[in-house]
Image (cartoon, rainbow, N blue to C red; front, side, top):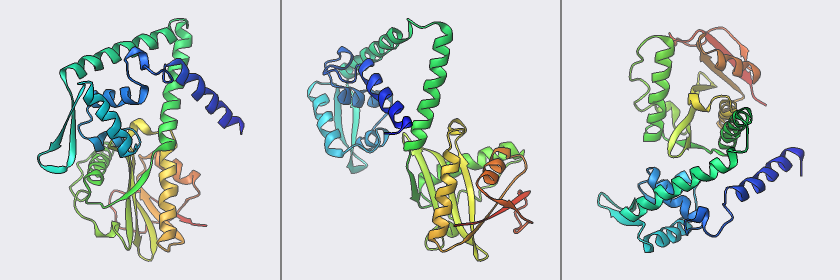
Amino acid sequence: MTVDTSVMRKFNMSYVRRVGALEDSFLGSGLPYGTARILYEIGLGAETVQDLRTRLGGLDSGYVSRMLRTLESKGYVALDRDPSDGRRRLVALTEDGLKQWDDLERRSEERAHLLLDPLTQRQRDRLNDALATADLLVRAATIVIDPVDPRDPMAQEAMGRYFAEIGDRFGFTVGDEGFGDDPSLRAPRGAFFVAASDGAPVASGAVREFEGTGEIKRMWVDPSWRGAGLGSRLLRHLEAEALRLGHRVVRLDTRDVLNEAIEMYERAGYERIDRYNDNPHATHFFRKELG
């Protein structure tokens, strides 16, 4: 056990006890924590069983089904087949389920006040900052970076947000070149990756072959996730993919206003080089030899 893991494990044991996660009836709801969490996620907008599994980190489908049957037997949840796709099961809270959800929300707020009330405002501010940072870092550490086809809706959503942001930061309207099919970002010569949280993309990037070397393209991290190291992790993932594709050298381009990206590339060992492509929006060009 290292110092870091000791702190993490101590916090986990302390926190789950103090928020009532170990109680048979979570917050006096009559439901164990796992089942109560399923009900809560449905109330937050999960519409299908798959949505629930995605939101809760890919829980085993059998486990989710058992908890849903419990909620259904109590009259809190209604389950139906999706008329447009019989393979999908729709989930929704009943009227009693909505009342139970409201009760869980109220009890959770009360438990949070019990934890915060003994603290001064300065202590509360410190705790809020620490918990926000811890939440972001833990989510970033546990997120999965998956390969997807660039035509996939998740990839298209990520690219839509990517082009919207760079258009705003560059001061011009970006065309639709990022929204169509780009065969260079698909196997066997390229790959596109998306990291998602709660079913929505929070980071994406691609690697492809360009003039005999690897090229990293369209790296994007959601602004609310920046500062947690997700960009650096995504960059390492893309470098590993470039190696897998047979490239010992990768190049990339960026623009002078993207200071955070430039700093990240330089920290990662990229060296500045002369222009190597005709991208009219790029001002800085980088190269790195992969180990």
